[in-house]
Length: 261
Ligand code: UDP
Image (cartoon, rainbow, N blue to C red; front, side):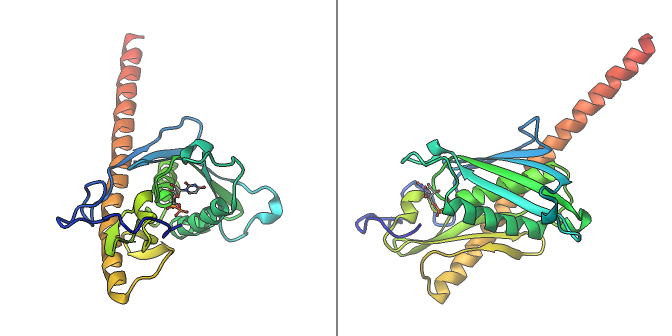
């Protein structure tokens, strides 16, 4: 929720630096790891600044209750949850209105990416837990979820990549922290795209921008999404290159065993 904060804070100083030293278009450090859970069909862990999210994918599998099934496509069931310890004021464990809303928008964004028509009568479950939160968690969750879907081998048009852009202290900035989201003039716009077609699959807005500011914010979002996309692809490449290396080693070991026998 944007816009509750202190009017005396300088969110962008004269040299163009923000509270944490970043430039207006700079993202927080992002780390993506895939294949982090043994029991899920696909998984990913993302650290994005102080945000930490873990995603687990199951399916495609049978829809229960059966009457919820769609004869033409798989249904995406997405569960975004914040751990009670992820925020300063210990959150109630039961999912609240905000988590249900975020699960819905994430499900719509992922539905646009997954080739759901290939799996009628089935469901694909995506569980995302936020372990640590500092604004931008829905985008951190989406980054993890789409990498986890790819890790599960689910056919997709593209990965989903995004960022939150907006405004604090009168300046258009990319990737707002909680301190920036709390600026009195804050605007927060989580946005996600399918990078190969630039199709926008998530766009929300809290606050008001001029047309010019929106143009700048939109441009920042596309550039940032491209960076996130590259990190996701790199993480998947790393995972499958190392998986191939393990397979090759196992094959060599098997051949050696056969020779010994
Ligand atoms: N937040 C919090 N307690 C809550 C919900 C949110 O402290 O119960 C914080 C948390 O840091 C979160 C931020 O507020 O990342 C911004 O929340 P918002 O609803 O804008 O979603 P987000 O930016 O995380 O996608």
